[in-house]
Length: 396
Image 1 (cartoon, one colour):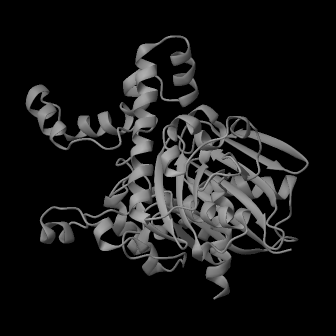
Image 2: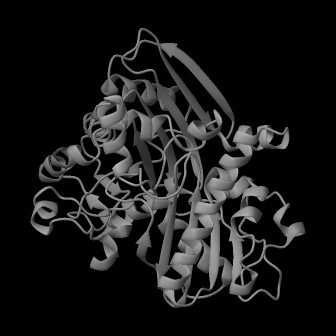
């Protein structure tokens, strides 16, 4: 059986899945973390067990060595399940990469050149690519970009209203993120509805610690909430989402906060955490239920922002077939789903309270059978989407 190894590499860790091509079954998954620290940790899971190990892991290349040892010792055998490709999640492809791309030296140069747009992610993604090339020198490597799905945005959607020459020179525009998830969920929703994706108008709500909305028209992204960076848009676990840019000027003048402090504030100390002291939606809901006024306000701000985007994108699409919830909060938060769409019945959008409470790992309706707009919960699977795109890239 041929397989795809999917790699999601961070600066001090990487996750992996081995996926069988024909059945799309996960044969193994794992995590290698604390890379570069005194003691590293690895976890390898197969259909028959889980194995963990503590060992020094000085760099990503050594981490791939630890992963290979886990495959050799605990299976499945990579000789018996040869790799058709290694698929890599790469966060930022700029406007250069519209689809999954077989990695060449030129592609690596381009990924490195785009580091200034994703300084926390692209360098780490590149480290994973280079470690995989060393570990599997004869296997095609494929980059699957978070931004690629959003390259179909029309100019009116991706253009910021600042000096056009400056924006072009500095590559300032909306790129969008979570594209791999939005693409997978759109296709899965169409399959569940039994309708061609090409004829559907969807709003996909990817609600996790990071969160974004995407308007999908005929399988193409036509609007999305994240912008040049993942900071814009919805309220998130620690990110502010939309904010008047002049707030930063005000804070600089009044407090002397510099660029680094403002970056830290908006990306790591804002959102639900900044409003309530809790960055996890489950903790916010518990605190709100216990009478914490700050947590209750945080929840309302979060839901208010989502409703605003749903209404906006409904108007942009002109018609709506379905709203789709996905990711950790979207898949597991019935109160968030109900609150996010509350008061929209005049738009044909409503949530059935009984269906909404059903727990399942399968796609499902949570709207009444008579609702003009279907409301769905569709679990995302970014690793499978990366595997599919990687296979397509190497198959020509």
